[in-house]
Every structure is written in C-alpha cells, then in structure tokens.
Amino acid sequence: MDKGCSGFCRSTYRITPPYPNFGSLWSVLALAAFLCAQVTISPAVSVNDLAEVYVHRYIEPDLSTELSTEGQSRADALAHYAVGTMLDNAGDTDEAIQRYLSVLELQPSQLDLARRVSQMLARSGQQAQGRHLLEGTLKNNTDQAFAYVILSEFLSTYHNGKQDNKDRALSLAKDAVEKFPTEVIGYKHLGGLYLLSKRRDDIRTMLDKALTVEQTNPYFWLQLGDLSRKAWLVRGNAGEIEQTINKLNRFYSKALAHAGSDDYVNERVGDFYHQSQQHDNAENIFRSIIDRNTDRLDVRRKLARVYHAQGNIVAYIDTLKKIIKIDPKDVQTHQNLAKAYAGINDIPNSLKHRRSALRIGKGSSDDYLKLADDMIQQISKISIDEREAELKDIVSFIKEAAYRFPNRPEFLLYITGPLGALSQHKDAVKFFQQYEEKVKKKSPERLNARFHFKFGASLERAGDIEKAAERFRTSIKKIGQQSNQEENQEFTAEVYNYLGYMWIENDMKIDEGGELIKEAFDLDPTNYAIADSLGWFYFKKEKYKEALEALLKSEDLIKKAGYDVDPVIADHIGQVYHALGDHEKAVQYMELTVKEDKEGKQEFIDRLAEYRKALEQSKQQTQVKEEPVEAP
Image (cartoon, rainbow, N blue to C red):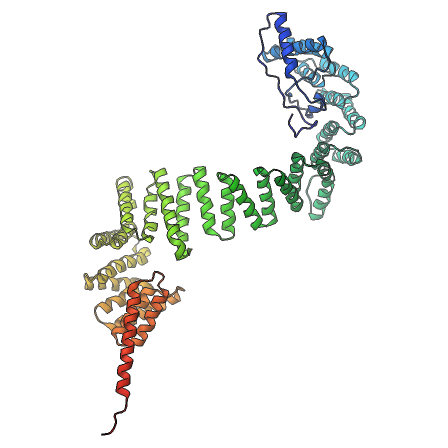
C-alpha cells in the first residue's frame, strides 16, 4: 500500500491475474484459489478506509476485495467476484451485478464493493435497488463509518430533488462524524456537503470540535488541515490573513507533532508552511527531510524555493549547486542557477549554466545565438589572465552550435570575433570564407558593407594586405549604394580610417591613405582613433607639429570618452616628442605606454630604453654647455 495513504485514501492495489478458461467448475475453483493467494491487504487497514469519497461524483476505485472469512465462503465469494469482473469488463452489466450481489450475500462487510454495485444499479436506472442495497449494508455494518458515508453519498447524488433524501444524506454524514470522531472519512464527506451548500461556518464549527479529538495518526490531522484550507480561505488584509493562517496551523502542527520521521507527512506540512509564507518553519522541515534522505532532489528543490522566497540568495545558489552535483543533467536547475548568478551580476557563472542547460536540454538555434552573443559581449570584462581560456571555450561552444545547426550560417560569422581575439586570424579568414559561400546564393544581402569591412580587418591581421584592401574598397562601394548614408556616417569614417591607417602603417600609398583619414576625420571629428591615425599620417610625412596637435587631440578625446590611456596613442605621442627633440616628454609617454600595455610588447620596452638613453645624453650635453670656462 502507498505509504501516503495510511488508512485514509483509496488503495492502489489491483487484481490483474491471468484468468483461466471458465468452461468448468474446476477452472472456477482454480481461479478462486489463485485469487486467494494474490489478494493482500494490511490487516491494520480495511478496504472501507481506503475509499476516497466525493460529493455528487463517483470515482470507481481500484478494487481489491478483502474477503476475511475462511473456507468455502471465501472461495465462493472470490469466484463470484472474478466472474463478475470479467462480465463487467465485457460490458454485461446486469450479469456482473448479479455476481457482485452474490459476493455481498456471502461477505456483507465488503463496503467498497457495495458502493460500486449501488452506483452500477443507479447508472442502469435502478436507483431504488441501489439505495436498498446500501440501506442493508448500513444495517449490517453500523460499526463502520464508511457504511454511513456511502449511503449519504448515494442519497446526495441521487436525491431526485427530494428534500427528505437531502436531509437524510446530511444526517448520515453527521452520524459518521459523531459516532466515529477519530475517522477522517466522515469529516471529509460532511465537509464536502457543507461546501456544496456554501455553509462554511458549519465546516468551521465541525473542525473546531475535531481539535478536541484524541487522535495520534498524523494523516488524520493532515487531511483535516487540507479541509480547513477550504473552510478558512486565506484572503483579506495582512491582519486577517495572519489570523486565518493561525487557524490552519492548529491542524498542521498536530500532524507534524505526530509525524515523527514520516517524510510524507513532514513534506506536506512543509509545503503548507511554504505556501503560507511561513518560510522559516518550511526551511526547518525540508532540511530535516534532506538530512534523512540526501538523495531527495525534489525536497532540495523545495528548500531552494524557500531560500529564494526568503531572499537568501547565497543559500539558494548553494542548494541549487548541491542539486547539480547530484544530478548534473538537471536542466531546470541549471537555468535557475543562471538566473540567480545573473541577479548578483556574476555573469561568467550565469553563462556557464546557461551553456550547460542548452547542451543538456537541446535548445533552439536562437537560444545558442543569444548565448554566443552574450558570451562574446562578456569578453571585455574578463581579466587578461582568464581571457584566453574563456575565448577558447567560446570558440568550442560556437563550433558545436555550427555543427548542430548547419542551416544557421550566423554561427560561422560569430566565431570569427573570438578567433581574432586569440590572434588566430588565418582561421578566422577561413570562417569568413565559409560564411560567404553559404549565403552568397540564397541570401546575398547578408554580404553587406559591414561584412566586407570585418572580413577585410581579419585579412589585414592575417597579413594579407592586398586582399584586405579589396574588401575595404568593396565595403566603401556598398556604402555608396545605400540610400541612408548619413545614418552610416560613423561607420563610413571607420572604414576610411582603417584602410588609410593600414596603408600608412605599412608604408604603402601614404598620400592616398592620408586623404582617406582626413575624410574620415571630417565625417567623425570626435573619434579618438581617427585623430590618432591623422597624427600618425603627419608623423609619416615628418610634419611633427601637425602630428603632435592631432595626437594630443586624440588623447583628450579618449579621456573625455572615459577610457584609460591607449598605449598605442601614448607611443605615437612619445615618438613625436622624440622626433621634436623633447626627450623628457618622450620618456614620460613611453613610460606610460609600457605601464598601460597589458601584452608587454618588446618594441615598447626597447623604445623606452632608447629614449631614456637619448634623454641622458641630452642632459650631459646640456651640462657641458653650462659649465663655466676657466680664465687662462
């Protein structure tokens, strides 16, 4: 029997043996003997206790008849029941009823069967016979609360509009409570009748009286607690809600007091405490259950929800992590952890659990794209020391997504950014090429100005200057074909600047590159990167004063933008000061360059050493000039 029933809900047992051929008396007797061996119900619980009673509604039970009399009577009853069941299943209701009635003649204490047969009679239009059967059943079983209940149930269902039947039904229900105050079935049925007629005050009076009953069975109090929630609805202002919860607590506290280590009762009471926002009580109960049953993940989830309701995010996350440790493939818990970490701005851990949830739960391509985009956005916030490992992880994730969703070429484009950040530019170029092949026939509009610009940048970093220039020119051409050029003014300036800077940095087409940079600066004069390129162009042309003016403007723009000093800009300024002979400022800017350069480029270190040497020589020369000449 289900441990949760304990005498107060229907049995889950079912007789399903392989039936022999009923062609002879011997086969019937063989079946009877077989059934005798199969039917097992705890002697501490009767079949009557295992029924669930409903008002105006009949749910046919999973019947396992307890045939208590020994000998021939029991065998005959079992045989009749077996044949009746077969006839019932075959749709021969009338013959099945006769067989069941034969069982009841031999075993009149089988209340659940009497209930079933009365319902069959009523449904076949024989309501009077059904009532007569139950009246006889009650007469033979006046010591059973269930006998009162099933007759009351029948009359309340088939009252035919007669007030006498309704009154008798209510009277029988009251008798079940008054004569058997320690059996919950009467309270449940009478409470159902009161609810049906909207007599909540009567339910409350009944339940208040029940509190005086001496009953140590926790299931009794648990089910009365459930009924009390229908009697006292939790609504109103804060004070009224608190008073109502206190009334309900009277029943659940009794259930808990008698529960001991019964986890079912403890858990149900814990659920009530959580639902009624008595979170501390719920926490204590759920923790005690987990202490006894460390593998109860369902209770751990309930405990996590309690912590969340308390606002105890640390304990909430810790509980979810323990669930994941036991069941690493729990998708919902990974998702909850992702939300929890995002809530405390721990984005790396949030992304990690989002990724786990996707891998386990087989998310959609859009889910993968969103996560890939969020992972890429997070890179700039990760420390240099951790960035390489994170970038490799992102590359692995996007490759996995590209393989899983071959019809979504966007992944091929997404992967180029992390590869570029890892300085794997040649690999990035390959993915640009794959993406281009995928979309050029079906979606050529995707190969727009921005695509060619990004492809060009990757080619430039891979060292293929000529092909990079072709892509930049294509990008510029496509920009010129757009009708909304003014809206793309900043992007246009970025493309001009990139192509121009690439040329002058590689000592190629310096004048043409300079003109592109000047045009870019006219389009976007507040862009510090373009101002730096303009200064570098003047430096290449040995126009140092113009170069210094543009580079100092770049430094001012980057500070106004709220960014740290760019080591490249500082290096450029240092080189201009050195060319102008201001070695002291040249050293100052190169020291700043080396300090801000997180990659530790050797060229910056060598240049600083060179400028320091030049500064020292300049000081020595100045000192010699300033020394007084002795008179002959």
